[in-house]
Amino acid sequence: MGETDKIVTPHYTFEKLPEELRRGIESGQMVRVTVEPEEQPAREPRPLHEMYGFAAGLYESQGLDPVDFIRQLRDEWDD
Image 1 (cartoon, rainbow, N blue to C red):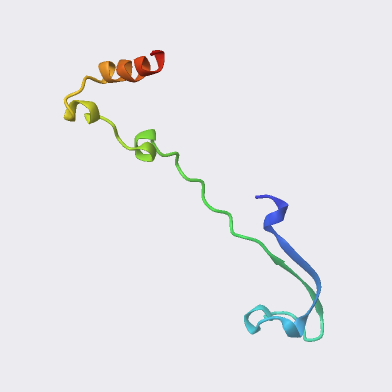
Image 2 (image 1 turned 180 degrees about the vertical axis):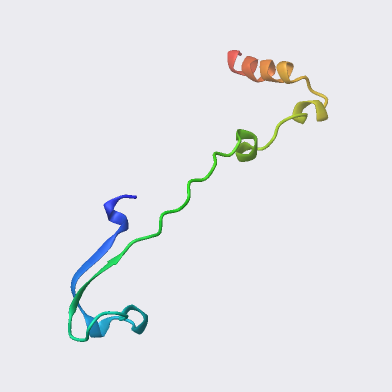
């Protein structure tokens, strides 16, 4: 997390705080308010087939041989 994700307001008046944040602080004191997002748990990396779609059987279902299909695409650029 970078420092740009944090907001710090020094010298904030106690009376401006919401009621739930006043616990344990005496009236009339100045406080420092820091707001920052909670740390998010690290996620497991997703398999590539989930991110880009699973291609098993894609060419065969269209009656194509995958190698021949790729060769045809490549040869289009050679003309």
